[in-house]
Picture: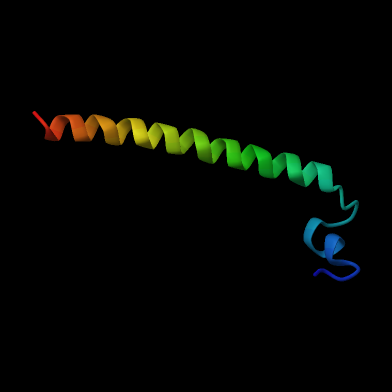
Length: 51
């Protein structure tokens, strides 16, 4: 799928895949945290509508 040199072009010199996977994992964890916070706020709004 990707040719030789793709890692250098995307990740720069060093091409440390574990470093980028760890960064991506942090991004995903933050997205999950924000989704949970959003859902909690939406639940509050829905509860107010039912009053």
